Amino acid sequence: MNPHRPVLAPRMRLRNISPYSSLLIMAKKVVATNRKARHDYDIEETYEAGIVLTGTEVKSLRAGGCSLKDGYALIKDGEAVLRNVYISSYEEGTIHNVEPNRERRLLLHHREIVRLATKVQERGYTLIALRIYFRHGYAKVELGLAKGRKNYDKRRKLKEEDEDRRTQEALKRYSRGQRV
Image (tube, rainbow, N blue to C red):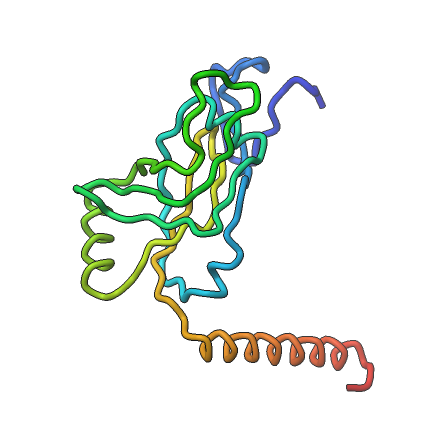
């Protein structure tokens, strides 16, 4: 196996790409995830959107300097905007560094924006940033169309997950022939 050739999935054929080309197929590289979102919200649908970033922000993301803790998106003047996502300033950047907590435009199709805007306004949904990753070299954000959970819903969900985990363990032990 030639170490200079790109490793491609089966059935994937690329023509006219040299082994030194920068157009190699890259897998998803997850930069940051919002693990608390799946606990606090019922996520019904997910959307993938591109993010408009400056060069130093991209370099900072590649270095892993990002937090999605309170990140959410909203529709403002017919555009999708990402708020409260902290992308740290690039250490080696100069005057081109921007504010770490600024609003960032999201790249979605117009029909997706209209659909999301109607759901957010009418039905009480919110758009939560679930994770930021690089796909084919472009920064993407996964948005979840979500409804907030009440505290008793959170407790019930944790209880159900615990019961499911215990039944799976019991089934595994039973299938191995051990005592339950």
